[in-house]
Image 1: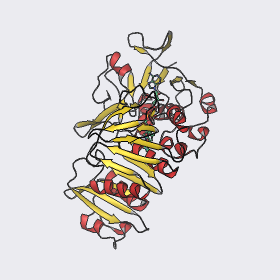
Image 2: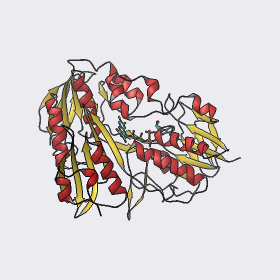
Image 3: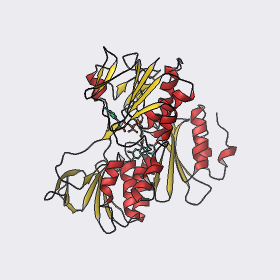
Image 4: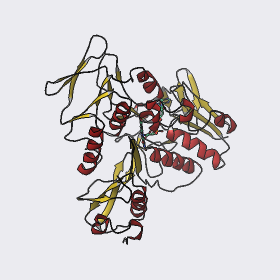
Length: 399
Ligand code: FAD
C-alpha cells in the first residue's frame, strides 16, 4: 500500500491530506505537526483571536475527529528532525516513519531580533498569541516593529483594545514591500484616525529593560517607553530539513511546475517553497496559495502532471476595513485610484502600460471581484474607465 507522509500540519499540509482522501487515495496517510493542536487557520491570530473574540476550536480547519474518520494518522507535538532519503523515511527523534511519497509543508517562522528580554512577542502560532494575551490590556504601551500587514493588523487590534500603540517602520513608508504609496497612505490615515502613532523611516536599534523590555531605542537615538513589543518584520521559510537532506533551495524549497523538489519522491507546498513563475521563481505567503498548492500536490501524487498555476489573492482586516488584493503588482508603472459605490470604498489599480497587474480594494468587494476576474483571464479595462467612478465597474469593457 502506498504510504504518504506530510511534514507540517498547517494550512498546506491539511489541504493536501484532505484532497488526497477526497480524490479517493486509499493508501496510508500520516500528517506530522510539531504544534500541540490540529491544523488551524492563522489569519485570525492577528485579528479576532488576538482581540479575544474567537474560541480556540473555531480556529481549527476541521474538527480533530475528521482525521480519524478519514483514516489520516495525525501526529501532534511531533517534530521531524531529519529525512533519510536513502531509506525513504522521516525521523522524529528515534522514531522512523517510512514513506513512498513525502510532502514538506513546513511553513515559515517570524524573523526576530535577538534579545533575552521577556515581553517581546511574535504573531505566528496560537502559543505566541496566548503568551501575549496577558499583556494586552487597556492603557498598556506597545511598540510594534514592522509596518507590514501583520504589524498593522496587530496595531489595529491593540488600538481597538485601548492600548497606546507606536508602530515603527524602517522603510520610508508602511507596506512599502507589498503595496503602492496610495495604499500606504490609506492605511496610515486609518491608523492615525484611531490614535496609532506611526513612525516611518526609523528602525529599531535595540530593546532595553531589566529582564523584561522597558524601552525601545530607535536608530536615530529616541527612546520609547513600553510595556511590551510585537515583532512583525517578516518571515523566513522553514527550509532546514530540506537543506539538510540535500534538496535544492532557492528562496525556499525549490520545486518544479508539479511541486516536486529535486528529489522526485518529495514534494513541497505553501509558505516554505518557491515555484516556477514567468521565467522566474515565486514564493507566496498566503492562505489561498497554501490551499491551492497543497491540493495540487495531492493531485500530482494521484497521477496528474498538470503545472501549478498560482492565482494570487490575499486579504487583510484592520478596524472596519477589509482589504482584498488580487494579482501581483511587481513592475507596475501607473496607479489609478477609484472611489467605490459604497461610502468609504476605495480601490487602487496597478497597471504596467495598458495591462492590469493587480488591484488593492478596500471595502470594495465588487472592484476586487472584477479585478480578480480580469487578471485571471488576462484582460485589462482602460485606466481612464477605472478612474471614472460614474462608469459602473460591471459594465466596463476589457480587452
Ligand atoms: P503553516 O500554516 O505555517 O504550517 C506549517 C506547519 O508546519 C506549522 O504548524 C509548523 O509548526 C509545522 N512544522 C514546521 N517544521 C516542522 C517539522 N520539522 N516537524 C513538524 N512540523 C513542522 N494569509 C492570508 O492569505 N490572509 C491573511 O489575512 C493572513 N493573515 C495572517 C495572519 C497571521 C498572524 C499569520 C501568521 C499569517 C497570516 N497569513 C495570511 C499567512 C498564512 O497564514 C500562511 O501563508 C499560511 O498559513 C501558510 O500555510 P503553510 O501550510 O505553508 O504554513
